[in-house]
Length: 467
Image 1 (cartoon, rainbow, N blue to C red):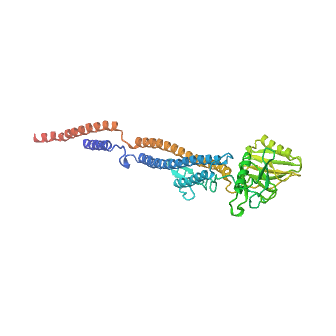
Image 2: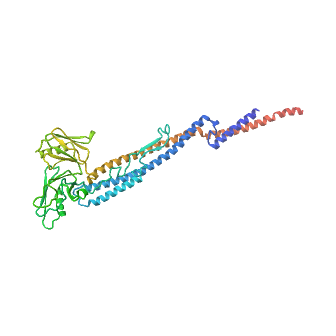
Image 3: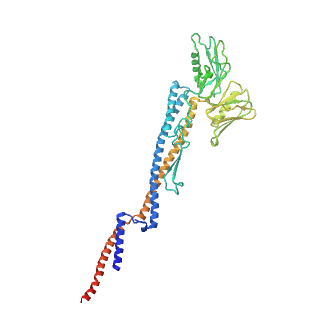
């Protein structure tokens, strides 16, 4: 009986060893190691979660790379648009601005198309969301297991970048205030224009009738030639409300006053008509004795110029003081120019960031913003802002790509370590079990031999009985 019990135990030992060697697992049923099986199952579930999480993260990286490629194209187009706007903004440009603007508008259309293709446009906001990619490996499904890439405010079409309505056809023209429809200067007629710029010295241009065959177009051409040295161009308005009236445009601060036509009939502008550069922000300043404060920027970049004026009758000195103080504090995009009214100055700047205020004895009118669709100068400012806005979106996309790649690296490391931990619990030790198999086989054969001996012992008693 002892031999039979041991034979049975040795047979079970051999069976269990063979099962582990052929399955590769130390734990083949809950009874083999219930506690170890629970831990191993936890590791296996984590590995399954992380394997899918790596796939999710790679899909997220692929999506962001597609978006990034589109953003790079849009950045290239913005650079080209800035080139076109800068070329058109130059007063020495002699080409056709309509040709420049045609390419500019085509680029705006392409930006809209590509923004839609990558899901970051007003018409396709598929990717304009807070994208959450589940990678796993955190404390819970909602804590430490997801990587977020927030593109909710990442529209990069013309609307999102603030380019809608911009153009580079020309700077915003100013129809001369009080002007009647421009008419042909008749025989013997002439008209004088006084030009004030930031130089502090007023210029004067006189246009006369050249006799037989002279035309309005020819007179506007001669006016343009005379104004070109000041960076100002003249044309006739085509807008319905001001059709045919004289208009002026330029890239820098100016104030132009037209005197009454003399010596003949007709006029290019009405008596005392005046034009300021409507491509720029404008403040009107009255130079009674008092102080003006002009500021630009905010916070650490705030620049302040304080000017003490000498009162009416000191226009040249006051203008020089204002512009000198602006330059001294680094406000380089604002200029004070004389106007057609003594003791009144026009502050003109290329951005909305500057403000003007006055103390007792002086006065400042409310600011006038640039005309809508202010041409190439406004386009330059808008494109610069668009570049900044696009850079913010590119930064979010790039940071998201990096975060996902880091998450993939961690997930792969966790997969390796969890797999190793599960293996140490669940997998069979092949070397040990191979040795155990040999041991089990020897013990089983010994048990069978012992059983044979045990079974032969009663034969001695039978021999005695036979005797």
